[in-house]
Length: 365
Image (cartoon, rainbow, N blue to C red; front, side, top):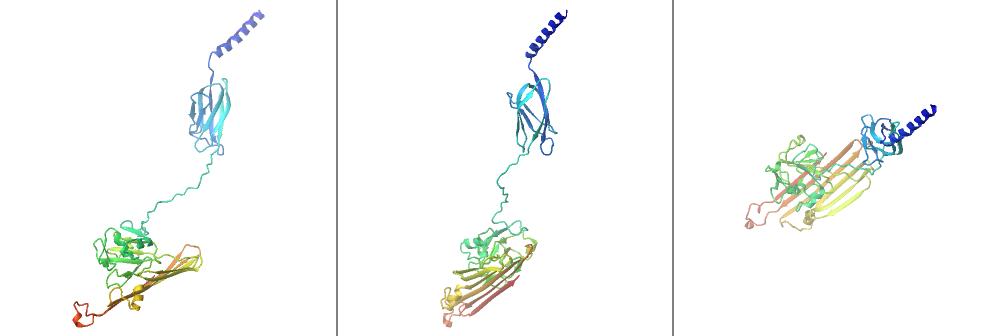
């Protein structure tokens, strides 16, 4: 009897594995993906079974948990990925039918070393220096005053190339802005209103024959034709907001120019290295030199001469937070018209007149 029972038990044990082999064993893989340093769950991390065809996978939930169901038992290759973290691969993960495979995966934050990134705003070359001038204003450089034909390094003549600006007379630098009278033009230097800064100027005018400003002194400046800020309260037609450059704070420099307008000498350098500087310019007219030699280029009865002096002193405080500037301009000009000798030679009223015009101007700020 005992032998019979033992035989039946052995037959039963051999039959069960045969039924199991006919079925495909499957099990679940679950776990959690966390940050290795903070131990916080990573939401949205991808989990892929790379060893299976079709690469089945899933993503972690809000707390970093995941579950893959119905995965065939055996050895598997698992891949874990998350943006900003180094990918992790688990090889030979054994999954059997008797127990779920539970994994606690730790991902290391990825450090990416790149070259320096420079973010710079694009600025137009003619963008106004005055932040309150939103429309109808543009800046101009020293190079522009030299580039425009027949400008003679004069900001007024240079502005004739801008829309809405035209000349009142060819021989003078008075300009008409959008049909307004030329005397409504406002001149400013370093934020201070100044009188007409031109040689051979006339009473009440805003222009003249030659500008007092030397190119050795000028920096980028603004020209406005309308919609003036409140600080330009006295302007009616246009505004020239002139700025002087600072002198060299490290080395002394000397510049000499000779041209059709005159002889131009400038010097600049440090008063105290790295902290303060000076810039000084003096001009004397070529016509004055030729007149002294009795050479008349304009008319044998006419002589013209001018000279001007400009300077700027620039001081920085010890902490670099405060800036103090002192500037000044001054100009002397003279025109002499001699009458035609002999009453029989007089044809117009200018022939019998001897005229002597002197124009002097100065400003300090």
